[in-house]
Image 1: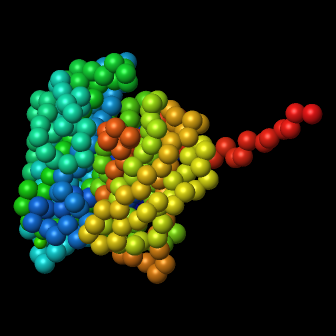
Image 2 (image 1 turned 90 degrees about the horizontal axis):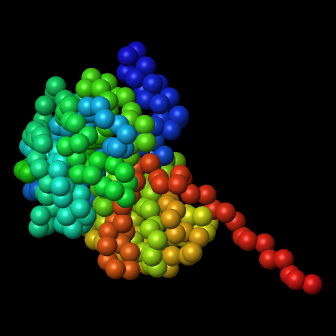
Image 3 (image 1 turned 180 degrees about the vertical axis):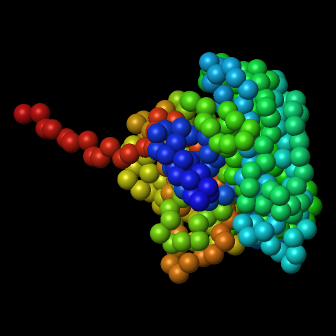
Length: 320
Ligand SMILES: [Ca+2]
Ligand SMILES: [Ca+2]
Ligand SMILES: [Ca+2]
């Protein structure tokens, strides 16, 4: 009963435009995914590390919490290899440089990607207490983040890494005003420069991620890893009805490049992940996108400017 009620409340909150579940409802992604570093990359994780950034609007000055659903690796949600023997470490960073350091905006855990100030950390192996349940980091003060003038927001980073073992950890986040339940912060958002996630195990379910196209973007290079030939990856935008991109099979990257159209500047694109029939089970995939300079572009869990809709052909009216 209480879980049903929680689900109902969560859905109700989402319907009204709050956006702190990570992944968000519009993305229709069941879980983020990080494997232990001893796993084969053919299970779907290329680097055993996932960074997410949380953006708190400057007019919010109350304490907040970062909650993790199912942080442990064990039980029914996670992906077992042999027996469960995986440890994942979650780290929360604030302070100068946690986001603005160039290494933090990259897609691989190299260099100073753990930039900023470590505010909290916790390791999890298999732990029934947190299986199918929430763990809470915080409270944090928004001013402990890095102030970003362009967003008028404070930014925090959470890194999850599989430090040992070979199993897959499935988990989600929630940015909350409460340490005991999920309560959204108005106008907050979350973003990542690389998305490592689990697809649904139902062929009808379409997952989405939404990169934002900044001014000055001429082309985008879309990369996907270990898609297992699971159906199609299609790009929708205000100017694109559906462009299929090259897809990967087992344990390799596929890359494709699209020329950005003027109408797409300062809008989000919608990358749709459409499953194959028959069902490909437990598909884990990693996706990133770079502009013509090679800079990784952010995926926002609440797409900037909203979910893009194709605007249709512009009607040509001949001049008489
Ligand atoms: Ca194992
Ligand atoms: Ca888990
Ligand atoms: Ca895969």
